[in-house]
Length: 314
Ligand SMILES: N=C(N)NCCCC(=O)O
Ligand SMILES: [Zn+2]
Ligand SMILES: [Zn+2]
Image (cartoon, rainbow, N blue to C red):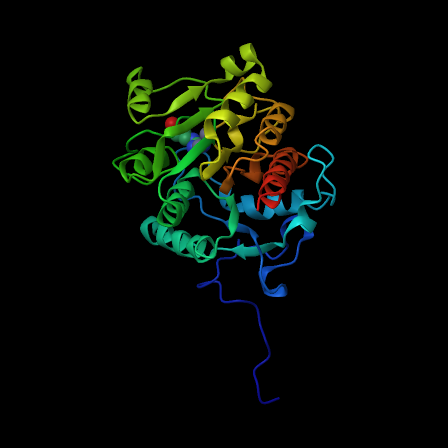
């Protein structure tokens, strides 16, 4: 043998928690000529304030997606026939250097966005939304944001650190990445650090549809308002899985009681049909705290609806 045998990948370059299976058993990007919708894993969790483990989110969501089927009856569409959807694997993020990791995420996402591809990112903790929004804004200009989360994630710093999972949308506002006329949090609830957290958030232009408002108005009314106000603006959808009640998503790092049901959230997403979703993420799935894949299966189904909507856009 003149060539050395092929061994395992170098774990100092390709972290061990990179995954090899694909979302919904789709082809990987190197198996297709081109793709219009991309699934990308970002196994990064160095930005968390409480329980770690979201670095294993991408592999858990892909595992939870194996049972998805080709036809989406709720939207009457075949997402994987409308356009080519492909899984681009994981970004090899540096787990010890947040600044470098943010750069790695931004450049990988930009490779796709630059070609006009729509990208669904599987996190990872919520820190990753910032470099993704940087990529989106570089291509589209400031984007509309629909942020599903128990938390505002517009706090300033943690222990002096500016890039964390509780701060991405404040940084995005400061960097002018967001279309301030079209920024919504949905599903917010739970204790805050101070009443001024809400004032700060409002001053950045965010509108809050808290979980109690969803309950009072009903999901349909809220979704119709969002669909109308978002119109056809380039839209980024960020789903922190902790927007779901811990009963529906126990596998996450900062759970808060009293959240949405998975059924409500699936309904809201489907009602966004026609909105110009240029990118989306599903973050904060931490499988170590999950049971029977409840959280990762919910995440996979949310991803399926997002991909369905993206695949129906021209
Ligand atoms: N983005 C998520 N999941 N959590 C942010 C919570 C930050 C904290 O107050 O500790
Ligand atoms: Zn959250
Ligand atoms: Zn969050």
